[in-house]
Each structure stands twice: as C-alpha cells, then as structure tokens.
Amino acid sequence: MNALPPSSAETPARPLPQFLIADDTPGKQFYLRALLRKSHFPAEIVVASTTGESEELIARMPNIVGAFVDYRMPETGGIPLVSLLRKHNPQAHIALVTASEGDQIEHDARQAGADTFVSTAYPETFVTEKILKLLEQWKETK
Image (cartoon, rainbow, N blue to C red):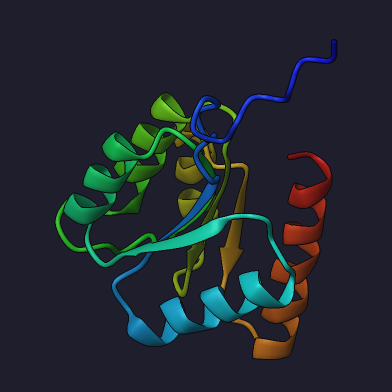
C-alpha cells in the first residue's frame, strides 16, 4: 500500500526568505522596494527606518537572504548594522547603498562584511541599472 504524503499540518513550513531594506528615507525605501519587485527577487521585503528597528528584525528573522543598508542610519549607523547582519546571516547578500561616496566608506563597508557598495550620488538611470544587475547576480547565487 502506498503511503500518503504528509499533510501540511505535519510538515513545518520553511520560513519565507526575507530581504531587508534598512534606510531612514521613505523615498529611497520606495525606490529600493520597487527595484526588488521589478527584479522578482524571491523574498519577502521587510523595511526598517532605524538601526534599532533593523537590529530587532535581524534578531527575529533568521532567514534574511539579502539587504540594502544605508550608511547614515539614525542611532549607530549602517556600518555596525552590516557587521551584525553578517554575523547573524553569514550567507546573506549585503550592499551598503548610500548617497555618500568615498573610498573610505566603501572600505569600511567591505571590512564590516558588505558584498558591495552602491553610491546613489550618480544619475538615477545608472544606479537603477547597477542595482538591477546586482539583484540578478544575487538571484543566481542564492
């Protein structure tokens, strides 16, 4: 006799992967969320406006697969947040995405565990193309 497959009540559901947007600017949150949707990135989008909110989400959500983190976040800033995220989610794809520019910021971001640095100080079409390409790469290496 063939055994029936387990019902969904017997099989615990895997948590849906999450993609964290940690940014205090509503316009940039909207922009990054739109790019994630446009790329059909396979994750639930969660948004935090402060490092404190971000830290709470990181502590509660063990399945963060990607993150866009702003450099100038209220409270402790983006660099310590990148470190914390990398510690809790070592396989996550992390980009520091900020209007700030500079080699030192990029260096600090990478030292903290960011995979890449994206400055939004450039024309929007350039930044949009760069982020969409990045998301496609991340989907392939998920």
